[in-house]
Every structure is written in structure tokens, then in C-alpha cells.
Length: 580
Image (cartoon, rainbow, N blue to C red; front, side):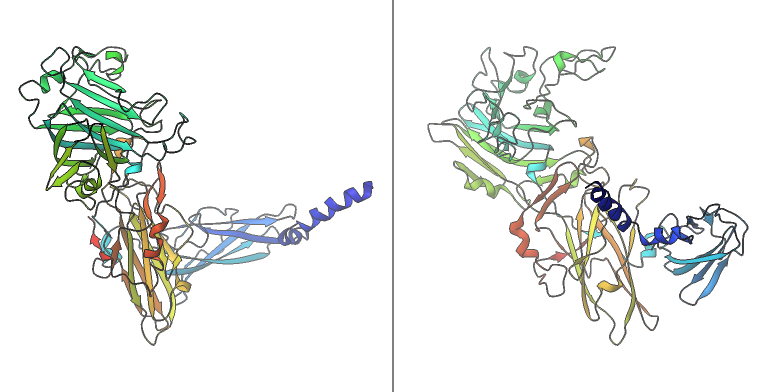
């Protein structure tokens, strides 16, 4: 019994010994891991004097390298561009190229011969290719950064935004807006840490019923479905002079103007809520001078080391706010509410993306955006006329309605091209970069196995690129190529500071150059431009980001089936736009 127990593991161990290890046990020495710039067979060397490396592998005792020789040959004409000659040295790492100047976009073969401790030479070969070797965009030979300037909105993931609208209370005592409604996290008690599920929304109400009395005007915030004890009729938070005697709300809404046109601004920054009326931030107390020692002031409403600013910083989260916590509320579905008999008008209602977004592109929902006020007309008691939304509750109960303002998706790009007739493709090399991240496709197949390329960089100074050998992916005749763009580290929430939203730019963009080489030495270029490429903004990837993940609508898949192939009908796609 004991012998049987030992035979099996010994046999298994022998079977797992790799072939090269068996060879080394027999005393053979090999040269392995030939690398240029620390990469195996790189396709885009940018260094004019790249570094060569290799290792010696041997089981022989006392084995060592005593000398080396590197020979680099240009593949197009077999010209030797560097011969180091036999160099007496044991160095095998970071050997600098000292030959004639390397040419851009050129293939080279190289071999290293190593003499061992006995003077026996061992030779191994590899290859590398140079990249564009020029930081200027003109080196991409007519390629442009392309994409789409169409806005898109994924309300479920939006946690840095401003709701801004003019409003007038026509009849009754209040005007209310809804946001953060139908949050999928609250529809499932297993995703809600409070273990409740069902209808959910946040209602902001401007209440003028007490104007002219000691009670005065009030901002009431109703939280529904977020936690146990939430009520649609009892405010979760009230800001009024009754609760905060030093509040400025009664200076903004007075008996003389209570039924006049006012502006309401609600800003949500990772759960921190601030409210403005007529461009003045609501406060809970009067500002004081800055404190010393960094203690928070004003009962937590002020900032560290800034004293009490008096600003009413509101939260509806059960936990905390900021970049270290789940954010509540996200924009989600939006709408209106009205008490029985109330009529309110809202004009120039917009949702803006804030952070670092350019003002000209900040509005993602309004009267003229892709999804617009028409979504409200399906709600009870709401009518739309131009830029005016009227909410009329002629029932005997509180009316609440909301809907999803989301539209658009990640940018998709495609083009088609044909190879030269009567010629055979011998090589095809694709250079790609993007503002944001990209995935490239040729004839229905994904290019490469990398993710989030071209990676992170200081985009205002440096933009990296990738190179791919796509020879086997091309066909003689018609071909198709496409790209899916994502925010990466360029747009969106690209750091742990939410206010860095869209820090580098507002739109993702692709820059690509495909170089096809034929058997007669001629070349064909296929570059990204707004003449030959098309764009689509309604695919299944509705949103993607490092912090919110990806939102995917499989119902959109039939519309893009085969989108990167030649037989796809792209009639619904639009002309690509140049992105500056």
C-alpha cells in the first residue's frame, strides 16, 4: 500500500517537467526572452536608440556569457544597419542600439550571438518594428480625431448634475420637482442596505402656504422608498425660518413676489445637495468669520477650516456623502408633483452636467435635446407648450409623476474600404489612439486583447497609441473596420474627485491609420476622417465608466448585429464629426 501511494506522485511530477527543462538537465544552454525596450517583438518602437536584452538559461554549473554580438537588419532590403561586433562582456540587459538612424514604420530583424564560458557561440533571432516616431498629428497622414458631438444621458449613473428651472405658482401653495426616482438600487431590497424596496423618489417642494405669517416660505424635501419610515406626506427635511431663524429663504420669497416667476436650482454633487432660489444659495444661518484649527462650523454646514458659510448642505443619504460612499440621489427618473388643486408652471427646465464640462455642452436635457419635454406629456396632469411645462392637479390627492430622461449610448464608428485589385496583401498594420478608451474591430473580429487602451496619461501633453499587426484580419476585396469608444480616463468620472467630471474634454474621439502593404511594395492608407467614417449613438452600451460600471441594453443588439462587417446596412448611421 505504501509503495502505491508514492509511485503516483513521483510519476505525476516527472510528467510535468517541461521539455526545455529536460534539455537543460542534459547540459544544453539556450538564449531566451529576446526583448527590445523590454517588449517581445514590439510593433511600435519610438526610441531612436532602443535597448536590447536577453537571458541565458543553462543547467550547467559555471556557465556564463563571455561575449556578445548584435546584428540588426532592415527587412525591406536586408541591409545591415548595425553590427556591434564581438564585444567581450557579460552584459545582457539594456544594450543600446548604436547603428544608423532607424526609420519610422519600418520592420527590422535582429540576432544576438552569445559566447559561453567555453567560447561556444549560441545565436537566437527576433524582430521589431518602429512606430510613427513623430509626435505631430500630420505624421498620421491625414487622419483626424473623429467621433460625435451628440450628447447622451444615462440618468441612473449621473451623480453630478444641476436641475435648473424657472417656476411660478399659478394657483395653490406649492411647486414641486421630482428627481432620483425609480432608482434600481431601491427597487430591490437586496441592493438597498435599508432592506426596503418599492416606489422611490426625492421631491423638492417650494411651499408658500406660510408666506406672510411667522412660518414663512419653506423648502420641503420628501424622501420616499430610500429607507424605513420614509413618507410621501411628511417631509424628510424642511428648510424654513421656523427651523432655521437665520435662514435667508424669507428674503427670497416674500408676500409681494410669492406668485411671481422665480428660478430654482438644485445641484447634486456625489450626494451633497445645494439649492438656490433666484441665483442665491439657501442658507441655514448667517456666515461667520473663518475658524482656526480646521473644526467644522455651523453644525456641520460649513467646511473644514472655512468657518460657517451658512450654506444649507443637504443630504438624503442614510450614510454619508462624497467620493467614498454610494451616492444618493443619482439623477434617475425626473418629474413633478402637485398638491390637490395646485397649478404650477415651469419654463426653461434643464438638466446640466457640471464639473469640468464646457458650458456650451452642459445641457443634457431640455426643450430641444434628443429626449425632451415630450416625455412629460405621458404623465397625469402635465401639459407642454414650447418651453413651458404646466402641472395641474385637479384631483383630491397628491399627484406624483416621473419618467426616464435617458437617451443615447457610447459612440460607435465604422468605415468600409476595398483592397487594391490584382494585388496580394503582404502586411497590414493598424495604428490607433483615442481621447477616451477604444475597442477596434475589423470584419467582425475584435483587434487585440488589450483593454482600456490607450491608457491613462496627461492628455493635454501626451497621448499614447497602440499598433497591431492585422494582416490576417483583412480580406482581398471589401473590408469593414469599426470602433467603440468609452470614457476611459478622458471624460466622465475619471478620478475619485467627482468634480473632475469631463476634466480633459467633453467628447471621446478616435485617431487611426491602417497601412496596407502589397506584394509589389505599394501601400494603401485607410485613416479616420469625417468623409469616409460614420457614427452611431444608439447601441446597446448605454454607459460605461470606471466607477459606475457598464449599463447594457440587450434590446439594442439587433440594430447593430454585424456592425463591423461589410454586409451591415448603416443607413441609420450619421456622418462622423471631427473632434478638436
